[in-house]
Length: 377
Image 1: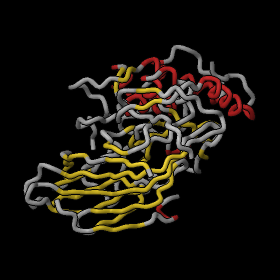
Image 2: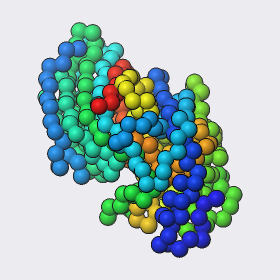
Image 3: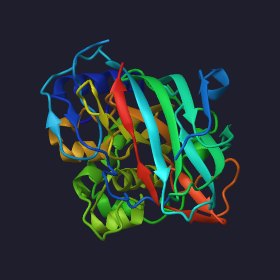
């Protein structure tokens, strides 16, 4: 089913052939976070700034393809040939309001900032927030973070809006990103909700671990997929990305799937990372985006191989595709967990950053309304 005896030099070639033979269609769903508060830890606009993202900020097809996201699925039934990678250009509006404050309450607000990645180019960024703002790069994962201070208006609200022009490429096998020099140390450590010594792997995989790196990754991918069910029942603690909780309960959203996968990889000293952003529907056009989506990557031969296990769970026909491939219908905003923002927040590490992080009087404040929107260019 997956290569376990191939020579190291032919591993990715074998992997590509397996994907090409099994790719059956592409999938769209709504965001992992949907329209709820999303179980996430985390006006008159007075200033507008337009910037073209420069090198320091960043370290065509017309056919409809699918998105990886987390809701109800539809499949277009189209297979993609091994050598094609779809490119999508769109405008993404990251907007909303901090709500429920007393008028004139002072708040400190941090927003994740989308930047260039291996599969993503930010062509333009326009910032509309009250007063002055700054964009800084945090030291641990290299995420860009926008920060501003503002007082609530007469309605107890603080608006924010960042408009991006984006070019996103489908990730296909054979176009892997290289690990940087710090990845082995950085992405094998435990975090608050992702332990490395809890014995989770033995609870989800009753088999010997194979020797080759791709086969081993597929074992972990399948083990998580078999163990977990995509489900978000009210009143349950899904959405925190708690690997222990996910292992014990066997359900959750994309954060829970991928935290369990990352914990399993790191238990074997395999570097693995968490990536989060938003899904786009496969249909070209425009519309609202209900919530976030996340995925993961793990190291093979010093390259990052992406996985989207919650999508594979929702459409088993796509299980081979989402082991090593990602659709172009997404935008990345940050990577990593237990984040220290710039300037540093007062209330402790941020579990992950995709929605606004807000503090009032040094304590986290969670009430906000969403206004996320996409429009194809």
